[in-house]
Length: 193
Image (cartoon, rainbow, N blue to C red; front, side):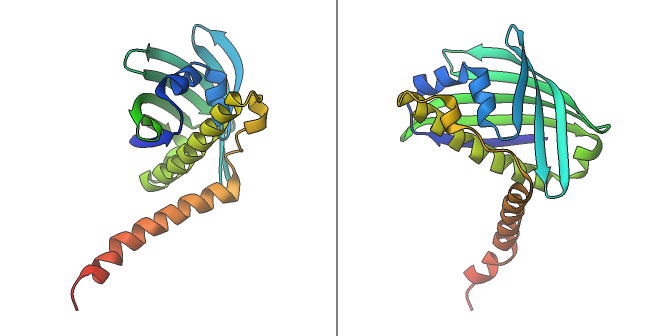
């Protein structure tokens, strides 16, 4: 499943690119993500936990930076893992491209996600909505960390929130309801009476 998203950060491209070079900092911005071991050569071991209401999905695996192109400001990360309490598998190729924008830097993110097992039972819409919520949180956390670094504060002062439970599920559900509302109700309001 291919999921595309983008966001802007109010910082210059070079500063955001420098931030992307610090993978523990980047991982700390993604809710529910924890790096557990630096394996060297741009490869890391870690866990990702996402709660959607009563369901908790926790994956353990590896992530590796397979491409880093400073001239084009493009980074590619391959991640794969298995559910810690189940039979599910997940793999993902994430490509992030940075470009100048009016407010600072635009970050285009493409995720090629493959799921098997319990995680695959969720529909594309729900997975896209949860991903959109996580990307919004990631961009806010990243902006806060870059700002904190500019002020000389430690990363702990701008720590990422957990990818949690009721709030994440509700935010994704609200996105789905808004999509349904736009699809079914707005065409009737636009038509002449």
